[in-house]
Length: 536
Image 1: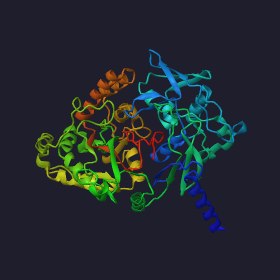
Image 2 (image 1 turned 120 degrees about the vertical axis):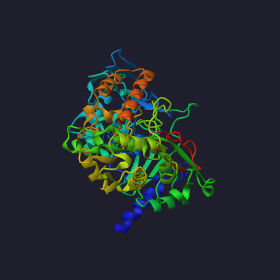
Image 3 (image 1 turned 135 degrees about the vertical axis):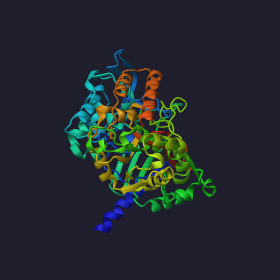
Image 4 (image 1 turned 90 degrees about the vertical axis):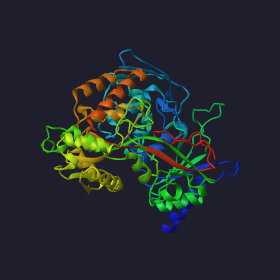
């Protein structure tokens, strides 16, 4: 019985991405997801493992282009009121949900504005328990005036709202599917995207097929997508996945891992010559900032007796590490030293000429230690650095660097889940942290220092509080003009640099190794997987 089931599954998988016998043109893109997929419901698109396949199956009002600019999708036009609180969208009238048994005659029906009202309210409804509920907290209501006119009202002006609407939480889905499948919609998704689920054997393989009724076309009027199918495997062993890529069984290898880092990359971050003929390397700044956080809220007992309440100590530690050396020797130059504030390279508001942070300056570090009453670190207690196993090498590097200026440290390692919980409850004075952008607006990063976002329940894990910062941050949220808002963001970032509630480490880079048989495959600072224009 077990053999028959396995054989049946193998046959389905083989057929699902095998060449079309009549046209012999079927093409399939293969990639691996080592973490597995927990849900294909957009309401639970809270990590890349889920986001990547969901993004192939659903669309929202707006989308991002390769430069992370907001462009039309199902909404062909929109208007924002002068007070920044009302958004009116005009929808296309040629977008259909993919064919599914929930519709009469199994034929997908046309998308209307009412579908967006339903979809947004579903994410907002606490009964759904969506981790994306926060994206609609500032909304006062959704209204469909007719099939093609949708209005969203906000309680307060919020300039990044258009960028937020590009997130997978904000896609459209049919009420019929939720009514039929309920929570099992997670494995029976019905959307409007370039692909739809053909087969999902959890833990083994996900097969997506081309949606023949997809509404987008390329510049020549050719219907998208070009591919016939997408195949996702779930190989947890990174060494095995690497070997599958080398054998040509996978079209893409995502990210850098110690298992294959030095095999594929030189110390300068270029592809080793023996692989250059068959593969190409794609790398872009990634909207992710790695840092060490300091708990700085002096109302907390653990901070009142902490050396970190002195800004000069925090500044000295920032000057005491060589970020260029860290990037070169620990990350093969596939990261960017964080010397221009907290907002990462790749973000539209990033400008290293206007925001200048900490460079390696041990002389300045010693000077600040002396001013704080600890000449050459004398009298300074041993500093406890808290981290997770994946970043132990970074903390060991920091430990060595700080030792050179007289600062002694001890490293404590916790599993990631435990680390996050302790940090969220102010249980660590000096801790490793990272922030990955949810959408391409610098507000997403600068909100970590807005005091109304104190954890738990918010991202201000350092408990940084500056009334001037808060006021300027609130002002920036009302400025719709990008260039004017970016200027305020840069001013906010300079304030973070001056007060140093964090030790800035590096801005990440998105990295992909791709087989050269693949064409039209790109990468961007959001590390999105966009397959509708890919050819093989």
